[in-house]
Every structure is written in C-alpha cells, then in structure tokens.
Amino acid sequence: MATDFKSIPLIVAFHGADISPLLANWDDPNMAEDKGVAEVVRQLDQACREAGFFYVISLTISSASFSIRQCIVIKQKGHGIPDSLVKEVRSVTRKFFDLPYEEKTKIKLSAATGYRGYQRVGENITKGIPDMHEAIDCYREVKQGMYGAFSNPLEGCNEWPTNPPNFRHLMEVYISLCTDLSRKIMRGIALALGGSVDELEGKRAGDPFWVFRIIGYPGVSCGHDMANSDIGCGAHTDYGLLTLVNQDDDITALQVRNLSGEWISAVPIPGTFVCNIGDMLKILSNGLYESTLHRVINKSPKYRVCVAYFYEPNFNAAIEPLDVCIENSGGTKKFEAAVYGKHLVSKILTNFVD
Ligand SMILES: N=C(N)NCCCC[C@H](N)C(=O)O
Ligand SMILES: O=C(O)CCC(=O)C(=O)O
Ligand SMILES: [Fe+2]
Image (cartoon, rainbow, N blue to C red; front, side, top):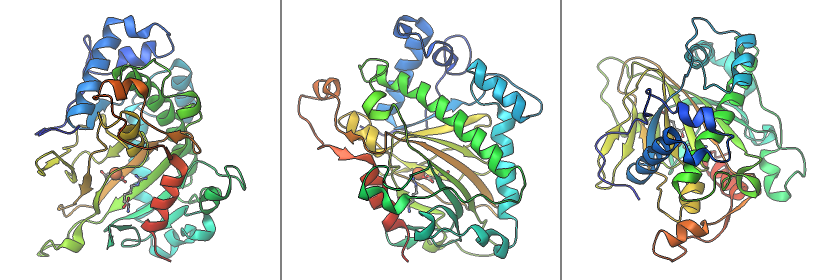
C-alpha cells in the first residue's frame, strides 16, 4: 500500500552500498539466515510497502570498458550488471533514435510483427492520449500456438535494427543479465512477503516472460510552452512483476505518484536502476505492495533516453494472492486470479490503434 513518500528509497546493504548480499547468496536455500540478506530483504519490504519504487545499484564490479567476452565472464561469476554496459545500452539507443525516420521505420511495429518493432512519436496511447515518445518494443519470443489462442497477437520474433551494428547483440546480452538480476531481486521480495525463497518461481515465474522497451523522449524546443500533449508517457502502472529502468543521468523526467496524489520525481542516481512493482506483484501480495502510478515528462531541451526491462510471470500463469499475503493483510482475498499473458495482450491491444 503506497504512502505519502516524498522521495524514492535507495536499497543499501550493511557493508557496502548495494544489494550484494542478495547477489552473493541468492542460490543458498538458507539465505534468509544471512544477516546481510536479511537487511536487504527488510529494506525491500519497506520500499515496496511505502512507495512501490526503489533504487538499486546496478554494478558490483566496475570496469573501464565493456566487451561481450567480459560480460560472459561476469554472468558466470553471478555479479550484477557492469555500469559500462548499462551506459553503452543508452548510448546505442541514442544513436538509433538519431537516425532519419526512413531508417528507423524499416523495423516498424504492426499487428503483423506481433507488436514488435519501432513506433514513432505519438503512436503509443495511454488512456486515450498519444504519448510523446518513440520506442522499439521487444518481447520474449512467442511461437505459434505456444500458449493457445490468446497469445496469437504477440506471435513473432523481435525486429532489430542493423544500425548501429552491435545493437542487437548488446541488447540481448543486457536482457539476459537483467533477467538474472531480476530473478535474484524477486527471491528477496519473496522473503520480504513472508514466503519461501522460491515462492515466485515454478508455476508462477520459474519460466519468466519479459518485455523490453527502448525509449526516446524528444526535448522541448526553445520558447515552447508545455501543453498536455507534451507528456512523454501518460500515467500508468506496469503490468508484470518488476521493472528495471535504465535512464539518462542528467535529466529528471520520471515521476511517481504518492498516496496524496503528489508527483515525486525519480531523480537519476548514476549507476542505479529505478525499480518498480507491476500489477502481478500487487495481486500476489494481496495489495500489500502497490503497482504505483507513474508518468514521464521531459521538460528539458535535451533528448532523453530510457531503456526499460520488465520481468514478468510465466506467460500462462494464473496469478492470485499468496496465502501468506492474505494472512498478513487481514485474511480477505482481494483479487481474483488473472492470467498474466491475457493481461499483457489486452494492454498491448489498447496501446496501439490500427
Ligand atoms: N510493458 C509496459 N509496462 N509498458 C509501459 C507502457 C506504458 C504506456 C502504455 N501506453 C499504457 O497505457 O500502459
Ligand atoms: O521513461 C521512464 O523513465 C519510464 C518509462 C515507463 O514507465 C515504461 O515504459 O513503462
Ligand atoms: Fe512504466
């Protein structure tokens, strides 16, 4: 349940300023007994109850330059995500959006591409109003007939630009590291909810779906007054479990709504992800955690880049409140079961008008 938070919490461990105890002990079945883990779990619980938003420090090792080889080594060691990769992802994104429209629209999103690919500014719609952003939307692959008829609209493979040349490879490595990091954070959140470490795995999210949005928000031009139509992304909640937002360091644009309706800025903290809770975790927690409303307004003259990774349940999971959360929230089940993939498809179909 959201509160009147005035700023977004930063998760800090006992010995160091990060979630490293969770990353170091994530596959230990007794990790809940580790003091460092317990402190991270306590902070996650508090942040999720108070704001539904928090910052985590993305890197556990620093590296001057990033290479794919290095990244594979990092993955094997089970570290977080190197800051150099996080920055590189934003840098290739900026290069792509800098290209002429004719070049970008070669990978145009449509119903025929399974809603994967490039959308121009104003194409994505939030509560009936066009958003002032352009984006590439990607989803985990959905093969024909994989989940039954309801997944048909999403069938297809992602549309990747060939320019910049390393774009696809870089993003695929990044997606894989975001999936690993999210799985570990979710184990912490499972404990925070009072469940077992693997409560949010197996039939719920053992085979997690993911959504990936590469987004650009044009800056405001000189002397131009802000109008309603200048909202980069209208107020919404995210659909799944956990979102990792990789945003530009130098522009404050993401805003989060607190209980009294004030918009609190998620001011960029270099080297961190802004994390937030989606609709499926709200249901699982029986409303103990809120999928907090947020929006984006770029009032800066500069173009803003954001790359958002969404960690989701199994596509066909029927998500309902956990027993432990029903007990801890007064004994009444507040939500009926929802199939995650159906929720996602219904959202996507209203985000785009043909
Ligand atoms: N997968 C996620 N969460 N995408 C977020 C997009 C939010 C805007 C969208 N038009 C909407 O109204 O939901
Ligand atoms: O641009 C941002 O900071 C956040 C974007 C967002 O909320 C989304 O894509 O769901
Ligand atoms: Fe969002």
